Image (cartoon, rainbow, N blue to C red; front, side):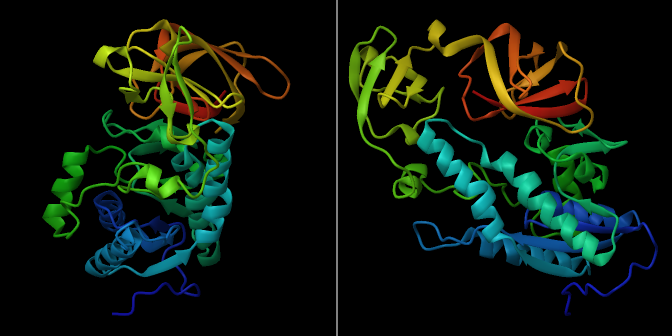
Length: 360
């Protein structure tokens, strides 16, 4: 069957067409099935973002695309591959490298959604004259607002906290009300071959490969001192880009007791480490820049909940506006461990994700 998308094909029923990002995993596969069952005309799109092979010469994207094609064929849905690799390298990978070289740790998986995934899906939908786009994220949309997924273990609203108001308003999240076991059960019932396929972990373009091996020829790095919070030298690090605040390591000191990265100091190329419960690992106040609000800009001061990393329980927080540029001050009720500059603070009002800002 030739199931390539025909951009000239009109939807049989106005308002019932949807462009779905089909990734090759079980979540988007079940999303495709559910949309079809709900009467949508589903157009499946696989986004080709990264085709560089791993250290074994294998390109995981090739397998994912093949899996996506098989799912589309099984469900008798049109399929197309959209090459967005240049956009991904320019708008996600390049800022990631630039941030590492500045001594911070950006989150490319968050940047990918508004600048690559949703932008590409909306562009295909516009060409087709289709109103909706959809993904296999564990999240929900209601009246143009981004809501958390019903499954607290899989909620992915944090990764969606930079998408735009227009993007969220036209997005469907078919599995947002489901748990992962329920999704796998549906996949088994339907006979989808990806029912037991494991999800990816780690940074999207690195996947399961060794981070340091992948990055060593892409970042500017040099060995430097590792010191504890008293200034005592414990050893030598391999290069600041290879470390993240909160990362656990022996670091050659502490009599065998694990040490954790507390701070990176680019000006002196120094890595500061601390023991597990050292106050240096905790912060009650932080600042964040470049705020993005999915709906309206909130009124400050703002009492809300904040998540500083994926799957972190929501934290009570008071947010104030520090400058006209949008610089924010966040004051937490409880000390926050391993706050990582370059990552995102996502803001919540109950189940609603308001947006996010970059931690400094």
